[in-house]
Length: 79
Image: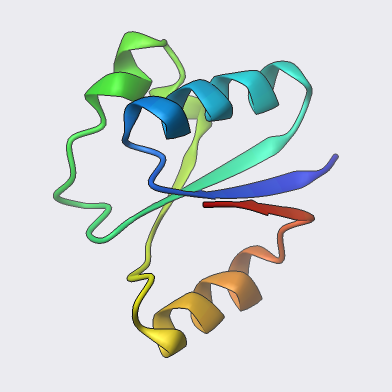
């Protein structure tokens, strides 16, 4: 199974991309600046909120990005 990492998964485009990748059989990880505090209404509306593995990541923080990439080890990255 391929693994995808989507930054900004809580937005409209990220949520639709996540739904598409799930349909294609991907394991999908999504990032948000603060995954515990973010609203994931778009994912919930599409019925995929529970299928996405969420990670906190700050795109402007190199260490944050590196930690996430090391942990998830995605086959594909979407921003």
